Image (cartoon, rainbow over all chains, first blue to last red; front, side, top):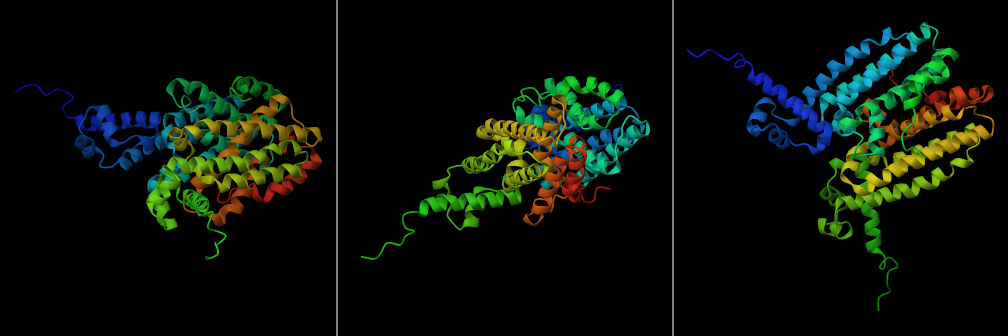
Length: 228
Length: 228
């Protein structure tokens, strides 16, 4: 009897994962509305029937990718109470932007995805609420260490504006340069600008010593290239 | 000889306008990707051929509506140098939000529209740049009257964050409540919240007397309902 190859037991699972990986790449690159399941199966060199066997509808691909996104994002957000210093906040927002970048197709066509997909319609509200709670928690931590001075009534609109910048920065970059902004080679610069603009909303509230420090951290990225 | 009715000379022009009005209404209501030319002609009770006679492609409808949007927006932005006082700024941003609301379909699916439409791809960048110049000009005016104290290096990221909030506030409201946020009866409340959050970014920079005034203007709207 021929020896069973170690991979024999797993191919269906692995194909399912490969399909997700390639779908994510194509969605990110071209936008979900412009990627058909036919294109995905062609890119994978599998039959449409095989794709259908794993994911009977495009919506299921989107839902599984959204669940991956949640699994990446929520543990990050849970780390918000550990933010005590300006440096922590810079790292925290940078990591949030990296996750958003990795699943940027969700943000690129968010409104349209929400209007067509019940899971996203329901769960993306929860994502925004979790972002809001995390930002408020980070602000409280920075307040606790004395690096941030902010009244409660000031914190609320600042937190909201930070969530808006966090959520829409990549879209803003896309409008400014649709042909290049979402290409992989732009990632690092775009993430840093996003994190810098999110953090810049704290500048007026950090104490004098920390203000110089924060300015030094974000200064190089807080300008948008080509803002005339 | 029967007397010519006064409207006889104009019907083609009027039909073309009616088509635009109805397209704008449907795009705003359902999102441009979800509105076909067939739906538009059915809503107008005209034949698809008649619609085609006026606008041979859906893209032309979008382009003409975008031009209307530009014609409404650009004169408003040109008024930015007249902003001298906190009250002026409040009125200014409120009016900007009214214009954005009126053409909200452009903002709802902005990234996808940009990827499919060359006029928008080129011109929307110019819209963002014009918004940026207008905001910086308003900040300079407020500085000139002494109501705002802001270093130049502070003004740049604040202006950028204001443009991001101005551009994406309605999308943010949509994610929070996809079934109702873009319905006409929500307009007034949504616009006021958008203007309030845009203006709230100025709070740390206005002088003490004006801060109370600004807080009184925006306070009732600077909370997002249901933000837990």
